[in-house]
Amino acid sequence: MECQTVYLKVVLMKLLPDKESEGPWSTAVLLLERWLGRHVRLDALMEDAGWEEGAQQDRARCQHLLFGVVRNLGRIDAALGALVVRTPRTRLRALLLVAGFELMEAGIEPAGEGRAAQIVHHAVAQAKLLLSPVEARMVNAVLRRLAGAPWLREPAPADTSEWARFFSHPAWLVRRWLTAFGAEATHSLLRWNQTPPPIYGRWRAAAGAEPGAPPPAWLHPTTWPGFHVVPAGHWAEVQPLLADGRLYLQDPATVVAPELLAPAAGECILDLCAAPGGKSLVLADLLRAAAMAGAVAPGRVVAVDLPDECRIGRLRENLAKIRGTEVALVQANVRQLSAALLEAHHLPEEYPAVLLDVPCSNTGVMRHRVDAKWRLREGDIARHAALQLTLLTAAARFVAPGGRLVYSTCSLEPEENEGVVEAFLRETGPRFTPGPARHCRPWEAGCDGAGAFLLRKNA
Image 1: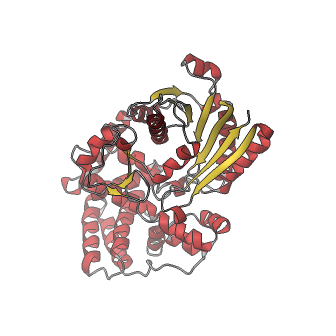
Image 2: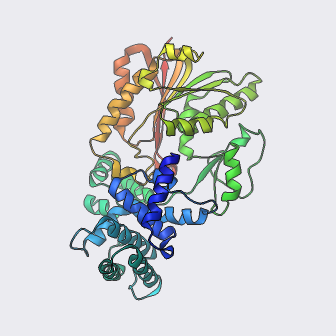
Image 3: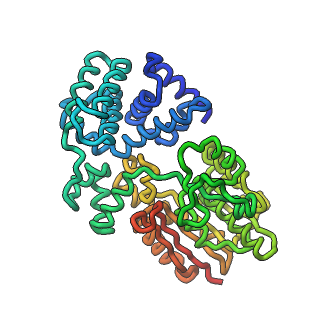
């Protein structure tokens, strides 16, 4: 990761030809150029950009522009496509997209007036630094026409192609959701995905790190117990809270699966596909709270994930923030995890409670992962479901008789949720009995989407 960060920083320094072009706007253009060319994950792209210490405002502005473009890519691209005859080279396209996003935020007004005029003027000035003179003149002409174009009006209800364009989603995904959820829910989901999310933080001190410690007054409480909205302008105060584990940034939907598993005091819990560790922290905190209530030993969390440097690094960092609960880390592919490997780590072969949070299509978290919809292909959902069934079957081997297994996703797709569970129950016959299930649907719950299913292994 460090090598990649240094490399990307050098690349950006070479690409920025003049001090005047250095800044969040031009950096957003160059990062977008890289994303358009390679479709690198946006979060990794931002993380690897080599931000200087104290550049939080620049980073926030750059991320706002970069994520805003990718979130609204279909809509801006369609508007530009009506004005540009030939497909522009990648950097020119990136600059037009960033300026187009700013115009979209400003609303419809003539290019010679108000905020639109400022946006066009700034974009042309940056084009003179980042592009050729001919391209800079093109930018001026295109953006002046774009500013007054009627491309911001919402289309008629349930028009699949127009909804896909206006809400910037693949048409096949819109069709799928219309079939699964109906027009009203699909419309709400599309609007939800296009709204930049607040930053949620779970105050762990109350149940984990420092029992009874109150959150600072600048954290805004929410309707979800323990969760707060982290307002802008407090990064200096947030950093030490994150570093010592009192606060953890995560969406309220992430507690659905751990709470359904309902850890009991003293249990040893197996957390599979555990990285980056948010659910492991929730499990540890639930164990600690249960132990304090019953005055018994808090138990242990065994976290397992692939031996990937980045994933394990983040998981290890988060597990280090657990206090008062034992924790163990095992680097392994769930499908290859064996009793012998667990024994080599001095760990049990079977567990009373197992959590499996599987890789999925991410259709429930597209408000946060704004590039996920552009990476996803129609055939991916069936491929995900096949892998998920394999992982669930592998996880079931480690559930003790009478124990509990929670299967969870951050997908909204029935094939990845009920479909996988039903296929698993058909394969296992009478060995497992289905228990309660919980669904988080953004248009109903007001948080990210998730599915969680409790399965009990018969004694």
